Image 1: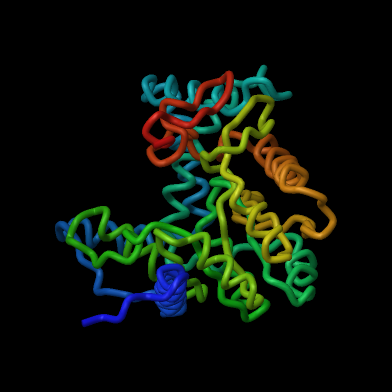
Image 2 (image 1 turned 30 degrees about the vertical axis):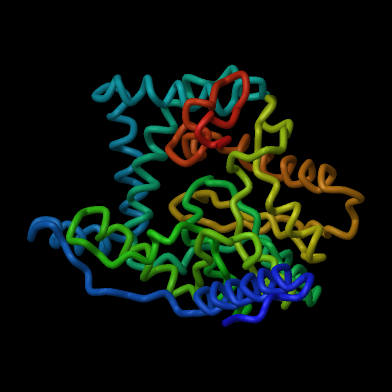
Length: 335
């Protein structure tokens, strides 16, 4: 028969279980990303994959430009959808008058994004602001890579591995580690997984993501967190009120971490990763101040190329809560 717990025993048991859970999640995050055999739904899909991976990037860019321009006339429904997305992004900003032109550019960018995804290597892009990356790492503290779903962000951790020899821990859903199932989606995930593994990435799985990231930052690691996600903090962003997540600011404040803004763009026929100036959490007196500083940096990058931002109304983001007047959390998201 178990002896009754002394006063406070339940609290200590809960703490021990919490600690064990955190250690388990840290152990999982430290494991190299698994790579599986590629599985294709058909022989045609296998051939298409091989061809898409081998086409040089400059040829993919040229083809995306041409096909995207043709889509303006051939795909009126896609153009109308692009107008709606662009309006949701730029309404209330200095670029609101350019909706039609930016919608045309978005059709090109969608082709460009897909072509870039199927490259054989994601770790050969140009790097802008490398001195900012080294300055952040040189602080000897944890570093938060703060990014928005802008351009081809998937390969943006490459410089951390190639130029600094650092591992990057990425917060994402556990589906990223599911073995291929023979579908087009399974093939896509395996291609993605192989590229991130090559760049020395690690996956921090939900649930318990915040506590795991905090523990990693406290020991001086580099973590990657999306800024443009729905949450409970109203932020003036892109000329409108947006209910945004504030996890990046909270992590930085709680762990004394440096925040390193990260953006992606196209420079002619090449893709580029750009590191902004590091933001020192010590220089901000509160959460709101740090949140606003991050919003300003990312807003500037987005307005430079708004056609490359992923749809705020996509599944998992603001969905039907994303409107030109503001982006609000959905009822389901608030539960």
